Amino acid sequence: MELENYLPLELGGKEYPVVKVGTQLWMAENLALLTPGSWFYEDNAMYGEKFGRLYTWQAAMEACPKGWKLPSQDDWSLLLEALGGEEAAWSKMMPGGASGLNILFAGYRNIKGVFMSVDRAADFWTSTEAGDANAWLRYLIHKKEKVHHIIDDKNCGFSVRYIKKD
Image (tube, rainbow, N blue to C red):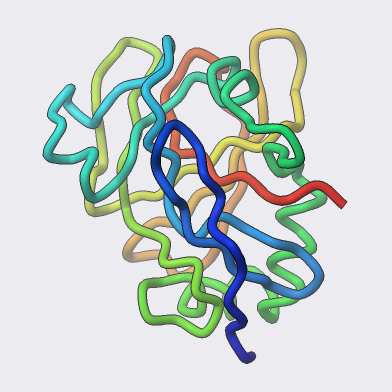
């Protein structure tokens, strides 16, 4: 896999690197845009420097810039297929990995407002809903080298990566 350079995504005065994986253009850094419904891990801006912010599903949908989208479950499936599957993709998605995605274990904020799993889990919203109150997410756990998926409450706080619309 050969990394190509693309113009960064400019959003809120910050430039986010962009990489091409398969046929898709992905943000190569977690969103760090201050919006209602977003938090730094443990409300500490020092975490934000490294990990970006954690967003409710609605905040993730609303913050999306024109020409980009919150990836769906299908978009994630295409990404994983391009990287060789759920298990092979894990190492390629890590910092220094072949994809250039540089996934960091930013943790999450649960429905009760408790921050958990920094340096152990990377959780990303998808645009795919699972009823009115829930949506699908993709996650990676530090000690389980595979990309997983699960449904969770839309009011939880997870990381966000956008992809360029077709």
